[in-house]
Amino acid sequence: MADSHGKLSCLIDNPEYLETLKSAIDIEDNGGTGPPWKKGWDYSDISESPQVLSQMVQDGLLDISQRRSGDPNVYKLFDLEEAKELVQLIEEDNQQDSESTDSDDADSKDYDIPDDLFDNIIGHEPIKDLIMRCITSDEQIHFRLQGESSTAKSLFLTQLERIPTSKYRSASGMTEVGLLDILMEQQPEFLLFDEIDKADNDCYTPLYELSEHGRVQKTISGNDVNIELDCNIIVTLNHPEKLPEELKKRMVKLEFEEYSDEDYLDIVTGVLMDKYGLDEEVAQYIAEYQLNELGEKNVREPEQIAKLADNDIEDVKRVIEYIGEYRL
Image (cartoon, rainbow, N blue to C red; front, side, top):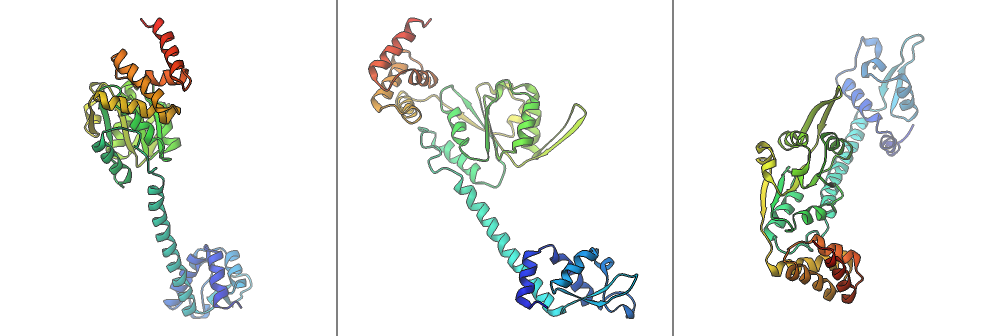
């Protein structure tokens, strides 16, 4: 028969034995079952198969109290008090593992958040702080980023996409079926939609249900869809009037104002250096051209110039000249 250490190892290796052992302890702790001749219990008393009980006998966790031809064998624990001690040790160990896992999960959320998440976004410090609070919170919080174009609204989403539990996409042309597919298949913790006001109107009801109840219930083509999801919704939009009021009310409104000239130059220069590897002098030249020559605080056109030109001011001038010849 296995010693206490051997029995403990056996329980660790076979966690499915634990509930059977606990049922047996409960029976014997209360005087056993059946008539006096029974002297124990059989498989039907603890809803376990005879095959498992036979294996537990071989492993030293049970004894056969009585073998009966044509009737179920009668079993007893190897030792009631020792069995209680083993179960207590296993449950204490499981509790420690659970607490350790919970701690690891909490740490992993912090670990998954890049330290430089918003470093390439100039300004908007209060918005950075609010969104970071959302990221680190256990509560569901939803934001709508709205306001002037080229004010880093979309840049916030692309940075949040770096979090592994996020899902980013442009909402332009998004359908209800496409939205439900994202929710069911990817189950994101952070749902990031750029230009949500360009999505199909059918998308707004599922988003409302998700923001209000944490679930979406729908019947599509005769099939019931039931999605339960703890999810933070963060969207950008230029035309808030297109969103239903009940959906807007469930999102914290963050209004973006136009950048100052100085901030715009810093932002575009930083984006072109970080994203396209341009020298500071080249990146700044493109930014100043966009602001001073075209009079537009647009981030996207400088990016197109950076893609077309070499990391050289003369080549940048050549690309700008070619584009200018065909600008209407």
